[in-house]
Length: 87
Length: 270
Image (cartoon, rainbow over all chains, first blue to last red; front, top):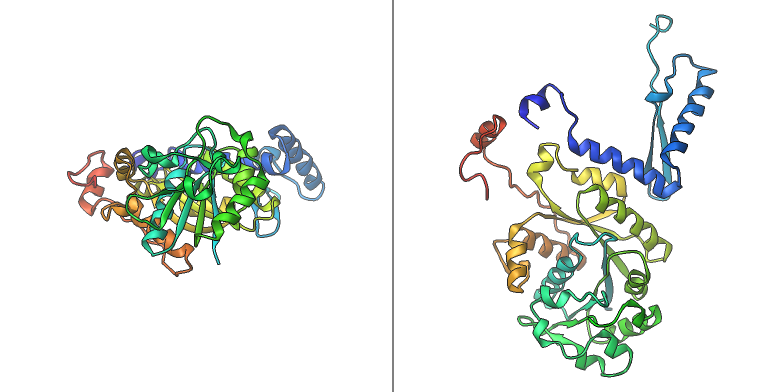
């Protein structure tokens, strides 16, 4: 990747891609969640959250698994769309 | 108190055997009595890395099956008389030994040596379980690649399930320049994912290839950055507090400026 591409963020760094792919396979390896189940989890999660908070986008939810000292952590990052109502 | 340490990885080809040979030699250089054991039955390698392949008479399976005494199978290192190799059998397979055999064998070795380093086979099957059966602690070797880290994660889970405590990590073949360009996962990336204690980082080093060609180990080569890293890991194993060196292989400012525009300054490749 060239300096200019990095500067203007045209391409994602391949180390970030490696990290994201690794986190996805480890969710599967550690807690037996397949990518399909993970997608379903995100859809259901967004449906629940949408009952309380509007403007949830299921496709934008990121679920990752982090290994802790004594337990693993399932972490969901749930971005909310900015709508005229909450601006 | 002697210590039995197994070097494992899950994935093959990440540097288990090289790590075992270098750590064994480095500990012997510290004046320790060390046995390195090749537990990869059927795929013998450690003898070649140490340059001892011509001296093998008996092997691990011969000891286990009672065809010779342990002392007859141990091969003395070329440089350090306190370093001995117990080679794997080449013509048998992993079913030739059991976990109980390995525990009995490591106990015999404990009586003679300060350190017993066991080179584990790749994989998660019987060979790996045999290799950790007699171990007090486990070192995991990985490289900063998706497949290697994934397999390391699996092995960490198994090591903990077998009650071998928390393994420590050797991050091998790191290319600092690629990391700084965002083209390789960093030390922090790997540690965050695996969440285990780091015992050392070994930079990618072409001298490993040339020393292995000759049947010598990198720790004997003062010019080898990987060799220095293995020496540091051996000192940490022995309990010394050795700060983690940041391997500066980054090119100078001028070559960095040229490098940014697709040029490479002469002499930047060291």
